[in-house]
Image (cartoon, rainbow, N blue to C red; front, side, top):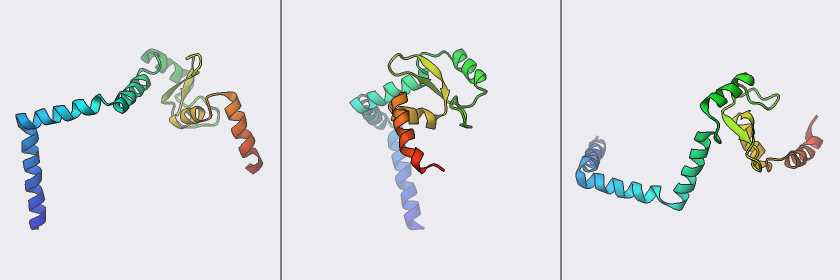
Length: 127
């Protein structure tokens, strides 16, 4: 019981420090250092592109989802479409996919040749 109370006292002291002007300044410095690192800039850029949906307006996303019935555009996939799929060479939007299908396409090189190679690999194991 003593250890539990001791940890509560430590947490209270930590919260009090964070609320103080000195603690706020320390948190601001840490956040500034974290948010300006090259890795964080890359993560933020990717997040912005994903949230932006590759320049597809919200109405366009809603229209595509309506056309697809809310489901992933890949035939046989029954998951909800959440990602805007686009051609990485031309940036042309192709439709809406679930996250798994979208990541799979990207992992296979985002082209028909990569899909053919994967199909050739798994075909002998299929019944």
